[in-house]
Length: 448
Image (cartoon, rainbow, N blue to C red; front, side):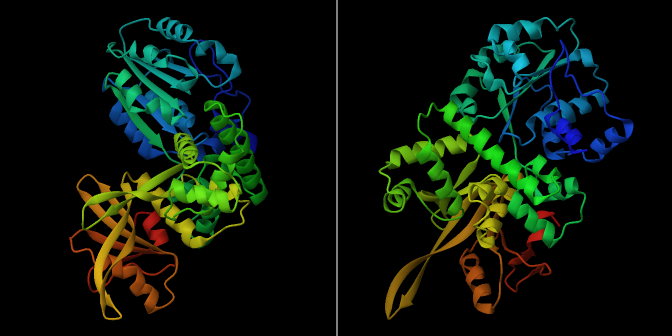
């Protein structure tokens, strides 16, 4: 049965002149099983719908195997069909399979699309893994001034969405970033009610769509291990022309071991020197970190001085964009629930469209009769349009001392934005006397 789910997630084994060739030997009952398991990704479908006909190139980005192809070729395609668009006006091109290698030539791709534009009606061009095409910018720009052609592409390399490339799109490129499954989506795919056991499973194995569909721990671990070693690391090495990637692999392990910890390239250089006995420079480390971010494996959060209203560029925190990939890299041996929950909250906030920083609050106090200035950390300063949240992550609050430790930084912030402590246990959601919201993690993840 799982082979059919694999077909669903990978979607297309090849294309004819106009459309995907889908597997045809699936019974009606099995088809129903696939649709029952369908991952709706409503947030991203809504973003694509909102962008329709906006005279821009829509670029769907994100981690490999996060479901970009599924979103474009299945969910969005089904939406177009439901609105009455016929197959002849939906041009789908998958550049990943070897059989379609000929379409990676920019002129061949251009001619292939042009040959299918038969009338003045609206056409939708859906292209998967556009980064395989040299000079793809010229190909896509060729359709910017054609009012009846709406272009959507996917790509797995952040480099081609740099400001330079968006300039080549003449300011008419729009990015739609796809994240792994949120916990709410994960529960939907697993077909289970949210509970602590399912949350623990999510913290360990992450939110890549296929991981959620595997039933055993062995299947999940093997899939994640193969994906990390044979896809992500190979992609990074080939894309960046690395002859020796041993230091880069070591850096992945160091970052994975220190999620949620303040660091910078100089600190990492010292770690390599003292523990790894390596003379790697901080400049090379910076370059490797950029490669990992370009591959959407990690993201960084800057420190923000809340009272001074300014950024502190170093040190910063790094978070993995999927916890399963972080954990498999460490052999599932370092399950520090405090750090995993902090990483999870970061991912959920990004999923909800917040920009996320690490807060820093300074205050004056007296120690041994001397006035001293100390700093406290606020785990997340979250901004979305005019909204701001201050959030502390607390896996456990075993006593009043720990409660006070989490509340104190928030109480030092004197503005009126909402202040929240997210707690790992299933405490009832409530507010403290000074208005700080105490929120259990599952209610937070389900947006209750």
